[in-house]
Image (cartoon, rainbow, N blue to C red; front, side, top):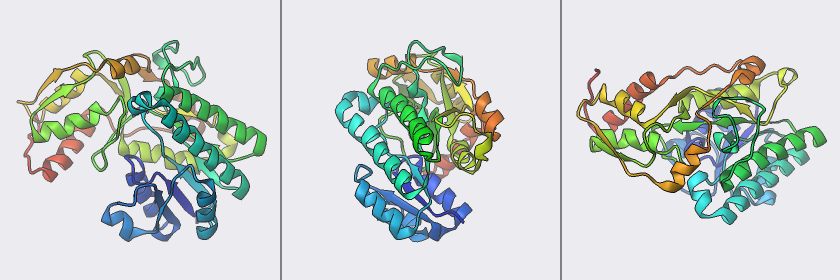
Length: 322
Ligand code: AKB
């Protein structure tokens, strides 16, 4: 049985991935670590919880020792929009934290999962069917840290034999924990506003197609990649993984099938629009499919029905199937 530490366990992905890992590997075998001391009751009651600043390598090493950890999921990062506002802090957290995780993984012989992002691409990258191996010249600090992170992880694998693996996540849509400061966040907020106010103001313009994924597929991608036979992996850091591609007007139309009087307007945020315009519209994920059997389950229609079902129940808002 694996013994896992999730760093950044209370963020959007961590809060659900940690509980999913506990289901698979046993509650006592998955340590939730985060810089924030507050977490959900379920997180605290179902397994070990520790406070961890991911840039503190000594503390990370001591937790790995204390719990005899053999696998780390390293999730902390400043997302694209907030990293653009605080580029120095983004470098310190995204790269400093990663370097500490890689060093601990090297010294303690841990496997390591490190998520990259569609943000690792830039304006010179082909935006449709973006190849696995292609031009990566991002023009945001988030992108710079993501592409540097991919290269650093590959280096640690080649040079030191660290078993480090990662995927390029698209925008992740979920209903447990809100994302903070990303460009794809509108595709989460829209569902909350639809059930609470029946109107939404979108900060990206119509036609802004981006790759997106529902959280259950994102969790499956992370766990399946870490379980994959290393002999089959030609790539490691990081695999394109794609599930759906849509523009704001598509998600609006999908919601209107359930909430016919839902309305969406636009107030464009130039910073996030420029970031979105530099990212892939749809990645080619055939390498992930061939090398470790990646296959998404959720599409826009099914995800929308599920998001509105959960949020509708939470905020006592009845939705109808169109
Ligand atoms: C962001 O929008 O910054 C993130 C991402 C796509 O990496 N959700």
